[in-house]
Length: 224
Length: 365
Image (cartoon, rainbow over all chains, first blue to last red; front, top):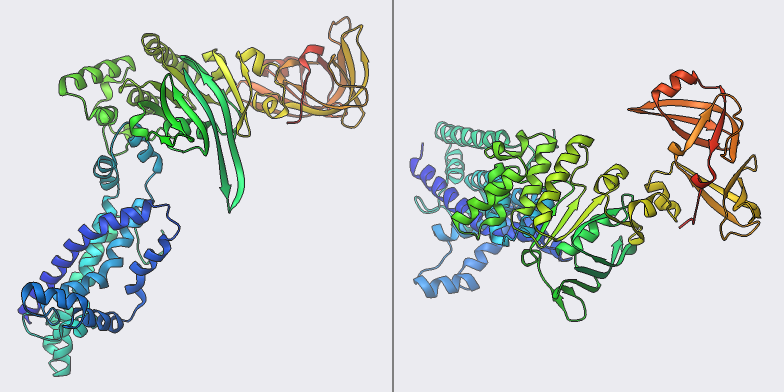
């Protein structure tokens, strides 16, 4: 088993799901409560990674991160080295790739809140911020957990985007799924088995947590 | 004094669907907003609370402007100092009774906060429920908590949207007493929405009747609801019998006019009105204002005695709804005891007795 790859994958998944939570909360709040007619445009952008092949997403990410891309140049001017084929580059690409898995459960749980509770909060003089932390967040808690867990699990298992943007540098960008691919290519089925089984178990536990916490919140299965 | 002069157009699928147009003054004390569902009562409260922004007009409390379309003023709900009990109550399900009631007091100092809390929990008899969550409360307890939460902030207006629906008469009366006691010390306008006639009578103050987004009439309950002027209000006010008729003749000397109902099979004598001979009118009669007799009555002052046949008998709690076909169908409310002693059964021939002044002419809209 390649411990280095597992540790790297876990580190990537933790970093990405933490950043995504911070980014997704305001984004989901806006999507759930705005009355702007054009919000479907932003919804589509957020959902794009669900339908785009990871290679397409990875390709554009690679160009953006590269020495000629806007982001890559900005990064290089800050830190003196390019962004592509680094851990930070991987984090950036993974953020895009897993964004819908964080945003959609949050939007769904915000939208399912009884609006009259928010009206009551306003009438009682509470600011929007107070309503968010005292009413919305506690009541949308299952959605928050779902968002974190799904973005964690999704990042843990990604392959195409990592390959496009990160390449295959041991300890820097060689994640578990790449490691499995490498072993299969090298006919090391035993090694591939061990890592694959571990990933399978982690994914199962993670999804069990999500559905155990609340099965009404976003899931690929119809409501039961 | 709360002055509301507003208009708000709602749209559904791009087309104008419902218009709220209100011009009304509300003085301190209770005002009952009465009307069928969809009349715009809750929307009016939402406009006053600042949850819905009107298109035109103004809302003022004394000298303070809550909303003025021309001056571009719109005070957000947070700044209006209003107490609002929603129809769904909207208690925060994850907070205890104490946290719910104290939610609006976050700005107050600890000592002031606990004093206000203490006073309101005592006034509404919910001291013992402090630690409970809304899910662990009975219907009446929830309603008390919602009322306490809305008044603890010392609001300048109180909006109550069917706050006591579903409670039995005794409990409702007890909570209303608590509310009256509370209001006695703080004379502020209280707008009380209901479509329940019994609640209107229990409160007994001024009624504003709303139909289709506007005020149809206002005044004391007896004047407004016992003699409604429109068919829609008659229906909402519990006039179960609403019949289309045509004026046959006017008899000014007797103070009455004769009206043929629907199919001409049935005639009624009703109070003299402005309708001319041949004109069509709508006649509203309360089911409780009609007497039933199993023999043709004689020597009565009532002018309308109509023979008919019992079509159906249905018990609804303490009243029995009897439908009698006398050329047109009449709904009559009697007591279960009356059904027993008269031995009412479907198919029985009966006589309907209706006083002239129990017949009210209403306009279709």
